[in-house]
Length: 142
Image 1 (cartoon, rainbow, N blue to C red):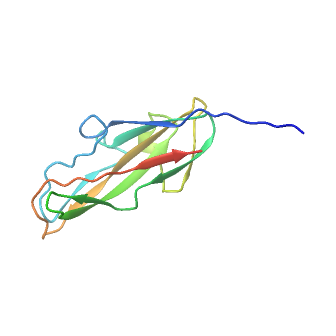
Image 2 (spheres, rainbow, N blue to C red; image 1 turned 90 degrees about the vertical axis):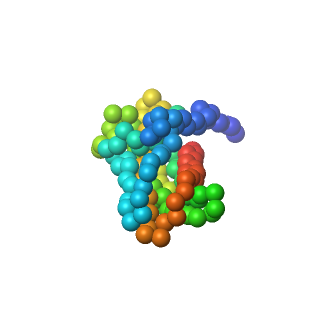
């Protein structure tokens, strides 16, 4: 009987770009009855996740629900609707394909994959003034 094992590199994700330069998304000032959008395929303000793992392997992505709740200090809420796209090359943002939670991505031969996060926030006419924030979680596993 033969026993075998395949050891793969640990998965790591770094986040960069984004509207604040460190990977965070900041829509800035948004008036009631307006929508603020950061296009994941075209905006330099989209957050960029660089995934490092084994070369040419398939990985599963999971992330926050289709809506991320943003809260202010008084627990008033807004909804962030994310848009996630990915590609094997960092230069391929505009042609990147949509990624859904539970979807499969294939790492490049150099063990890299790039994921851009954008989306939108709509402030209803009843939106309360305040500073809103929330968290988007991304996990990539073998």
